[in-house]
Length: 148
Image (cartoon, rainbow, N blue to C red; front, top):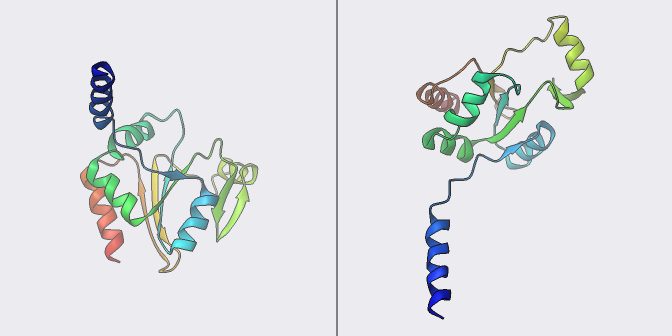
């Protein structure tokens, strides 16, 4: 009996120190549907797997407690990898990956990574951030977008 109580207490202590959960990221299609139904803006993170700056944003910047809470409380968070994801947004319509990549190869819709796009379809507002952001820069940009 004492062993059971001891192991229960140890388990409770270990679980109380678990790492905080990551931001809930959605696909573009699901994120847009959720944003529309919840009347929330979208926080779109465009990345590629081999980009060290993208990985830094994902592992070091987004977990920042202030940045994370601003994103979770005010946006629907969407991750988009143009190398692997299958659908993209343009003029409120989803287009196929192969069409997108063909356009990118011509330079018509070229996208540098990492890129953050905050947009609100209701207010028609948009803010684009290119390159690596530090937590303070990202926080300030999010707050600027939300004040519009």
